[in-house]
Length: 346
Image (cartoon, rainbow, N blue to C red; front, side):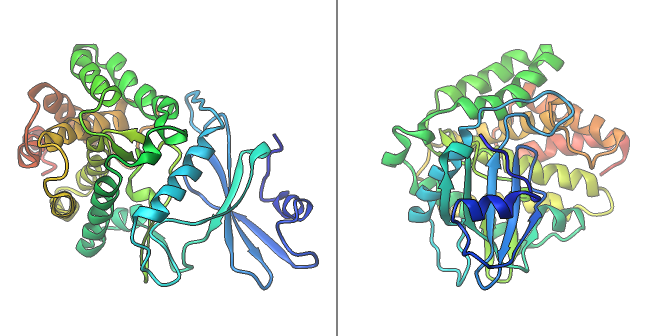
């Protein structure tokens, strides 16, 4: 495999015949995630595109390895979602469109989001609690789950495999916190088994979070699908809600609007899903939200925006939720309020 960097990408693309000869090429690194090299490529006289190449070792302090083939999982995910998601946004789809691939180098190119795109995570951390964006994101996740329920593309091929999901989510998140909190191992192992043998099987993004949602004047664009697989939709729901919870914990007590967004997202998701998925999904999502919250404090890749008192509050809340197993989102939020009061955060 030939590794491509922003410094070598222009020559690489010319050698592969991917850009017209004689055209100027400008390449800049994009700051998405820790697991790939992602670059924006601007070619004179052509629309910009994004170049993405997998790396075996992730850019984290702890050693974190994942196989390079996950890049083809992402390509399969984009191909599937291009057919099941509405693409009515003028000039920008809900997901990028694959342009070309270089199989030997574990690399592909895709369309670029609009220039006015802002990462939703940045908006949330800046205190922008946009209800319209949150509702749109909830509807997108609901659409993904209901439109892929029983889809043939999930039966075999890259999306039927869960190796990368294990490497990038179950091991560094769930098994790591089970070692850090051995008294919770039975509850966490039950969650792992539910992921390995899901009651309902849909397309699962497994990284549906504000850092992977781009907000722009034409709507939203969802990116980063390398952990995608056929699995339990409750994981996606719990995962994204945990991100919104943590942003809310960071802002409390001065601003609780980010916590209120969790209900906005969940209501939009359930409006779209209706009765298509199993009745136990919300309870499982609550458990996954608790486990994912604990993982972002004590797992392999902790968040960098919570101070020590808030980390302690999240730890108490998540431990209580995993023990008590709340059945509804309101019950989960009540647990959060209970465990944060001793520190006067909310």
